[in-house]
Length: 117
Image 1: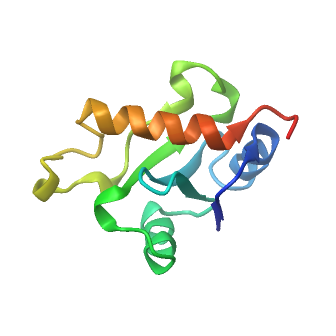
Image 2: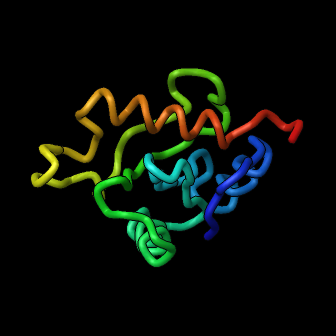
């Protein structure tokens, strides 16, 4: 499990997906700090890591990345148990607020690069 503050290559994500779930990498994105945690079995573990490193709960959102769909709409899946939070009007495992989804996409686009780092 690690925090990505700068960049990660799509090849690294493919390697992670191969050893974890075969086709996806779980990630938690901090939309304010523009960082994300990757490489864990559970979003909750990544969320905990980010909280221990100064992130604020309301800014953390769980997603799944599908490396084989890099640069396509299917690359990011907004689905995690940590997203269930009625206190932020998010009553599903998805991310219901379009502005938050856009911020998540911006962070992922900034951090995940094609293989030339």
